[in-house]
Length: 280
Image 1 (cartoon, rainbow, N blue to C red):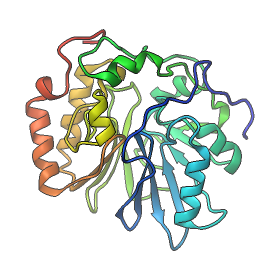
Image 2 (image 1 turned 180 degrees about the horizontal axis):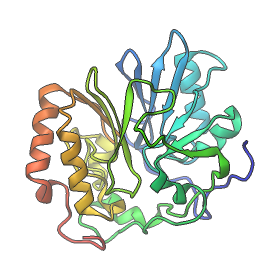
Image 3 (image 1 turned 90 degrees about the vertical axis):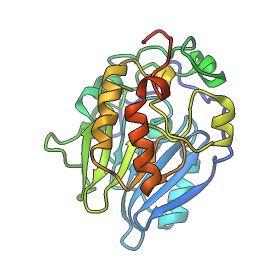
């Protein structure tokens, strides 16, 4: 099962981090967030039964750290039933090959994301000219070549269900990537948004380093379809989530989340969409 996997030719460690790196947050009894450098991974499941999944796979070279966190939270030699990818950008698949090799588990992603995960198509190049700060200017060094997970990656079920996450549904939220998905649980309206929107302005180094808490659109330097990005945020705001965890930044709750999403929808062009850049 684990044969024929390789990262893209530009895969490498990225020397950027934040004050949140190495921090874990118990968002809910069955939802744990952990930050590797500048990006979040999520463990979804019951620590008592040790039945859980991993959502996204961190930064390059973070496999040992992720394994250690999982074993400290769920127990020695525990591992997830599957890895669910919100999308395939380098900071969300950075340890996926090592983890699949170690655990021999399946990976799931939207069918439109599959070509980027099976070695067929590169993502659009990061845009260092986009409006933003130092992280945006650094983005030309970020990997964008496709990885190849071979037969280890599978398309998410077309009925909206999420394997091994029985109460969640996946929602297609393109814009940041063609096959980006967010995950939503109706009973408590918890949202795993991925990079459809984030809670830190990811383009600005100081805000990334300090993790200043504020809602923003998807990271500008890797977003190529702003029309779809706005439509995806409108779709997620209509769900009226009570808790949102995002690919970058800390969780957002309750009234602050509701008002922040309303503001983001109403002022998308000012808050999220850059004034200039390659894909605007």
